[in-house]
Image 1 (cartoon, rainbow, N blue to C red):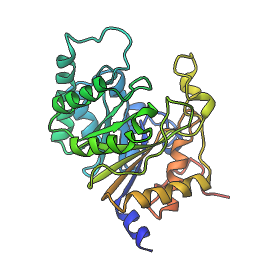
Image 2: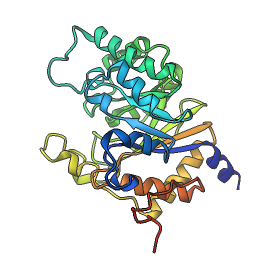
Image 3: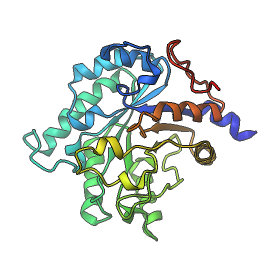
Length: 292
């Protein structure tokens, strides 16, 4: 029973974003009230709005103020900082872009609400010297901030590169973002159950929709890419995986990102129940996930 007691104390489960999970809110909840409602039910959230535009420091402070003292944000790095943008970035240069993001993230850090900044790199960011240099520069430019790292190109974990990549992450102080995602060629990676820091590991569950994984260029990609509902056996598999991670890391942040069909909240609560964590109460006007 050793694993059960560890997991109950050190696993924190949340969702990607707070705006789309209608199931956890009373009917008629206004958009501006959702973060406060969300943070009364889950201990962490992934802030994904920061991927599309760098928030202002004032906005970061407002979000922080709407949440309890113990709440934490995993802030997704702006897309221009990870090479996702195809056109010109709306900044004078790369340093200006990083500076603006740092100023915003610093506001949240000062309020004690910043768990980490997540750098998720695109599928074309392969294991090459120039990209290793980019990672080193990013770590330098984001000095003083806790950073999590997620790859999408398989080359980082192919063969002997697996151990080299993990060693590099440990040396540079990156938090490993361990993924569960469709195995759909070189633009996806397997779940590498190896912490790179003793204090914390991030787990992101994207679903296993193989046919929708490479749909980014399609008009309806948001509707299909993360369209997946984990069954109980798959969640039990992740319970075992999380307990394995906790053998060599003190905390696990678990984010469900499978919300194209609105499944993230239900799956998160299922995992919390399986791990004997406190399951958030749904509003009275929402049917319980666990009702027969």
